Length: 352
Image (cartoon, rainbow, N blue to C red; front, side):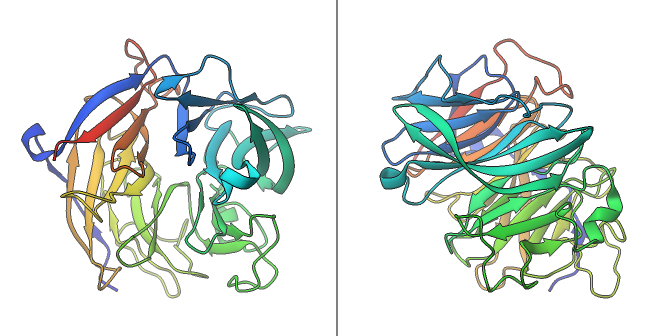
């Protein structure tokens, strides 16, 4: 594995970007994740507690579902990640990650919903009582190539949780789609897949190597892109940046003293940027583009960035099956400056 390194991205100008950017929906309230159904519909979450749907490119006024109490949207918590079942066309299952309150404590959980005719109802709780807080709730969920559900959780503002294998906080979790624990998980009987995370908010698998990568917020700078290995310890709060400690893995690349606040991420699946990793940045207000080696997943090449400041805070970047890309802005999340029409969905259409 190559040593961890701080990077300063090269800024690309519009002539170097093989996409045309168009706003396709506006007036959203802190959109968090966006996914495609086989019939072309686009489902997305809004952090205050609604799942919305776009049908033939038009955002529908009525939500698919609005979450009732004990759901809460406080600070960085709320309705966050969303995933569609690989067999959605047959079973109509969606999976969502959300924050809730139990007494005076804040937790997160993953639920399964069943959708029909653009309406959904809660079907099953898959995993709950993930420690949460007003900060560091993680929240990204993705279904991997192995058809298991991967879940990022933050430390909830209590940093020692990340090193505690008995806690679900500060981890990447892996469960089956019915909520049971896979027998090949690294810690028998536990959903924990990796640990030592502060606030991971992105997951993506390389189409070239099959390797899993994550993005993670650092404490002040030192935001990370990590290559995820089962059972590995990623060091928080013991190490950050270029620091090393026995049994702990440093990041592949990090932001040094700068702050990216990296969130959703996706690999480009077609065109001149195929197999490049894209990462949406909140504080950085840009999209990172990272070249990764198919032969050695632990080797990162050039790191560049595009659209700095153009759309404000970016929560997610997603790659559609047809090769278009989508960005979600997050200027209404309490950390940014709201712009006219915020928040928005921006479609990036390939130019060639």
